[in-house]
Length: 182
Image (cartoon, rainbow, N blue to C red; front, side):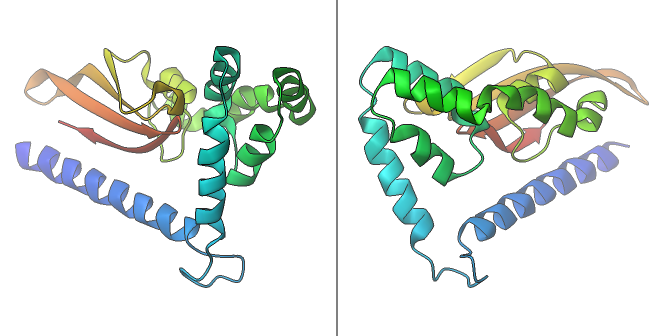
């Protein structure tokens, strides 16, 4: 039975790696479907980083950090960040209705939440709905960018009784990029 759980853990890791690789390939594919020939995503990321440095007030930083998991694209981040003052940023939030996305996303991930499962790209708030609050959150770099590692401990039933299962979820920009289970 132990071999089964080891095989299951390895399979989960392989699937997670494959999903990350697919996502990276999609990000490096341009509109014509050519791999690596588009510099646009990198161009956007440079502009995004420059505009993020312009977030000076705590109010601006807090709002951006709150919205980060809900942006659907780099273009949308740029659209938000190009607003020069807090009032314009708030107008953008109202116009795009970005704060309604958590409830829309919860519907999209309903089956995963019911099965207490997670998926690549899932926002951190939805992970909390599925797995609950983590025991520990570690932040990598600036907390504004929500690059985090969440640790969970869960009791699971096995044929040999109950055991403690450790889980770690990795986030970039407030969205799941991978996880592991011990």
